[in-house]
Length: 377
Image (cartoon, rainbow, N blue to C red; front, top):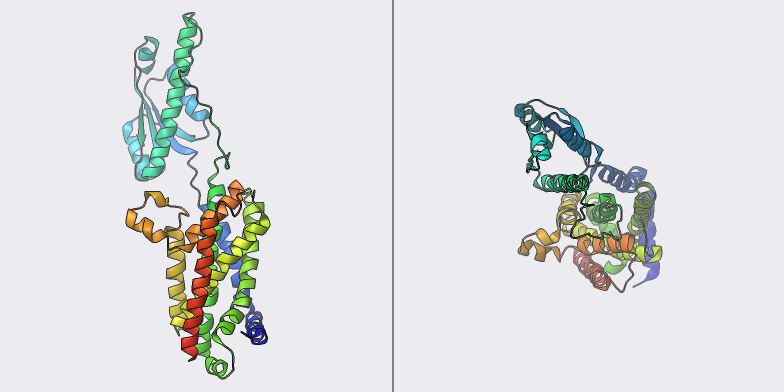
């Protein structure tokens, strides 16, 4: 390999990028725009559940229960209705998720020491959200019932009722349980996989379409020099994109970065190198920019979004799909990013993920170089 020829190809690619400011601006702006859109729009938090109340009892006891719901940050009381049909109508219009029904005679049963019942109606169209909302209702009503029993016992002079088991809960790494702390590092990985593959997927195909590949073939440049030279410019842009995305994640979304910044950038560099080589490989396979772009989107966006564990838990997928996810590099990069961001772990705990990313980068570079060599030959 000749460094002078590699540097010449890199200089040519840098000049090409600089002479096309619109593409450069798009390459730098798209990651930040995607991160802002997804970061603000995509949230897994379930709170402020829109709720309607049907209070058939209209007693101080029923109002006390409603106040419990009103004081919880997980529920948003939108109003009171007089009949079931109103709850059904608003649920059909997707305006509420929960309808709480307090039947007539609730306070009488409660004051007489009998078991009082209430009814919670949930829209199960989104089963995951409905399950979480059901858990909130059960926890709130359970705590309220315990308080009522304790008050009744105190009135009878029996002291305070203590639960038989008192859990001591402590959440590690994401103490506020904010879904953004979990989503944003994964989002950075998905965006960089897409951008890196798209940046380089057009480079060789563009040479063929513009007719400049023949001039390149007449030079003594070798395939490895061509791949490295072209990739140098896009690797620089990709690292700038990565720095912007990390800065937005840390300073705008306030995601805690507990690990080493240097180790974080090294890991990002390894992943970016492999993703850029993948784009060059696609570009060598397709002589059309349109085909290369479509192949880049299909092979980068879909696996990174669906099969990396970014949103959907891999453990819940069918076994055959779980096996396929082992071939998705974004899976390992997301695991590494979340570990560095939230847990502050070092290379000793994510050695397997780093080894796969290194193997992925080496394999894609080797295959891309051979494919470009075949094209040149």
